[in-house]
Image 1 (cartoon, rainbow, N blue to C red):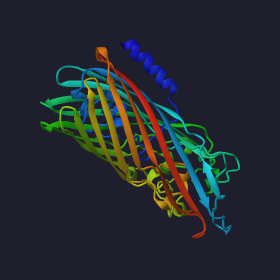
Image 2 (spheres, rainbow, N blue to C red):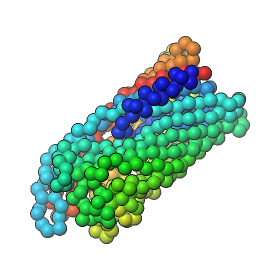
Image 3 (cartoon, rainbow, N blue to C red):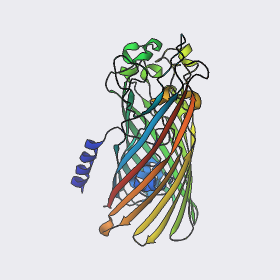
Image 4 (cartoon, rainbow, N blue to C red):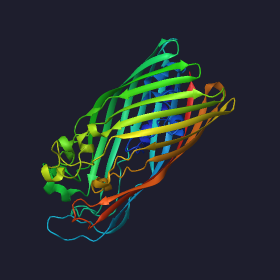
Length: 419
């Protein structure tokens, strides 16, 4: 069994690449089943990957190993309307429509749960976030050193979980998280004059960072037909991207925002279950993500604590999922989620690099139980196209408009077995 798990792990780490997400740059769900429910599941125990949503969920699972691979395909473009004014002190962009060329990414997810005894479980997991990869084949910001513009963020987490059923049908869990991320930017050297460290703003290949955090969770049956769950993840403090100390606030700092989520799951009958989750992602706790472009670019250098960032706001995400037992060994799942938009119309210029503007997701999935405790799972998610538009903040008033547009699809397959 260990040999089989090792082979799967090696294969998935080899194919991992730029990774993407939907609610800003957080995935709407981790693992096939949770993705099929549009991310709902704080009050459900569906797989060992569920520790990414609620560590307490492991108490109500048998020992098992879960692995999945998602094919993620985002479509990103922006439209510039209006000619540059040419006025001194302005920064107009070339009118037209430009599409990002990067549009396919594999995303592996892995989870392991082991029951120490009837009340205690331990688990391991590997998950990924992203959504800030763009590849425009043009010098959008007129960087004289690059004919392309874009950024690449790869963000991965390794988690070790302990969960205990401290009373019948009531569990508490905690996950220790280690984060690893990699970042590169190209085509942004034109902002060197606004930077505290012009040598570390663009084209410096990959810069890496590591850090630590934790997630805490509770799950319990409050009524015979109703389960409640709650979870909180601390901000994951990361080391700085030293090669981009002149781009991100606080000398290249790019911490992972704190999040919390609560949810309920109700059994309408033996075959039908409904799940409802509410989540908040606290982007405002990270300066490099939340600092606005105006007035910060006028009052502080890029790379300083108050340097301009992406201007992302905290968002609330509302997730609804349903599970129906088609047969004794087959489950149909579906879900819908809606989130606030982290990108305000005043922040469209820098968010050409990271147009995380989708808000609505529709998902469907199927789980098939096989002999010997094995199962195969599949899900499909469509993020509806959404656009945000606003004035170019570095141009003359009413001179130029920038519209960001994004949609995406994801197909995920998974395999699990008990031991």
